[in-house]
Length: 252
Length: 292
Image 1 (cartoon, each protein chain N blue to C red):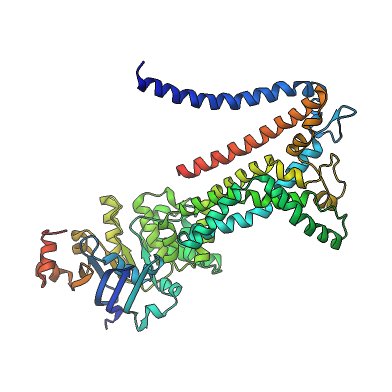
Image 2 (cartoon, rainbow over the protein chains, first blue to last red):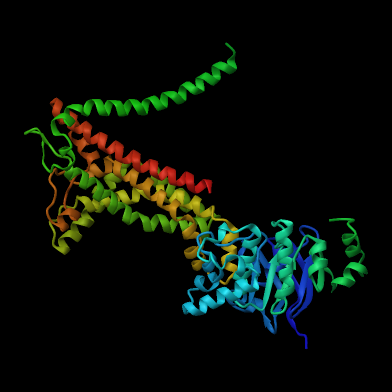
């Protein structure tokens, strides 16, 4: 039985007076890949950052409305706990430059001062790196600095770092926009494998990417969620004229 | 000649003059200290007796006095400069409170050092004297600790203003990466901001140290000016002492023969080298840090 992991209803977000997310209602089901697309400034990244409450870290940023993880209101939960449960991968790979590959993977545990047995940590590192399709490439250099890796490897390291916390949902904010085509395809490949265990929400500028990787696509325009449907449906027969204009390249 | 050429040459000339002045100072210091170097040799640095009447010159007590006051001042100032750097760099970078704090710190650097000397004499000395009576050491009031306390206040801006800039330079991508893993603000500062800025903050401390080593007026007014080195720890901290800079300031007018004068200049030369080296190391770390 499928059930909803993340749901929003009449959700709004602002930067100061600037209303960037308007009355968004959406239900995201478990073990699916959701692509969120739309032109620059349409509020898609802001909406993504509201889901794990990263939005509020920016001074002047506010949000209102209902946003739930399963049955719990995200905005009533402790933000620290929200971020354990909802991982995030950023636009540019951002491994911690002072930490080794190993320590980067378990950074979530180390940052929070959780004491764990070495064997458990070893286990988490191997499992997470394997899930991120990076284990074979780095298993002999686990104690080298993560910043020596290539851009694509660094991004997969950041994915491993998110997986290590065993979240319910992983948010991706344009995860391949800073990567070359080969690294991009390796990360996209990974999405198919990750959805076995996680729910993925991917903000992307790249329509082909949305079409390739996602089960469902959400189209944002001027802060509104215009359309949310199966990706195939959306790209072949969109129901809204704005979606159609966007995917046929009439505006970007 | 065209005006363009004249203007360009004028700029170069001005720049060269500055370099010549520094080199000139160094040459003067070396030339004037030759008589003292000849007669005292390397013993100048670790000989413990400074007796101008007998023509015996040992800088060791002043070397220790200088290092001691500077390091105590540094230890006292580091918590403040780090705290201010973190608060203004990370917690509260904008707004009226932030501006007020930042301006106050800049004002600390702008107050003439003789004012600090006065403040130390009128406010700190009586307080220190009471403390000394309570803990059972000779109640001089003036001495190493008093000088260090004032020095600590004076050097805070040097490390703090650099620290604020460096902490603001920490890429927000790294901080967000940590927040997204469920880190609290304190954990982000401890595990992301501090490791990233560690070397730069250390460079700021070095710049403060360079300032502390050379500070003359306030220290001269508060340190008690005795040429002998205390024998026990309590007197070393609470008792009067002397620094290289304050010896020069105090005794220059009394130096009535060549040997005496030359010994004072040699003190200046030592001070010059120590502060220049510390400043160079600090600057190098900062350039390396900002280039990365």
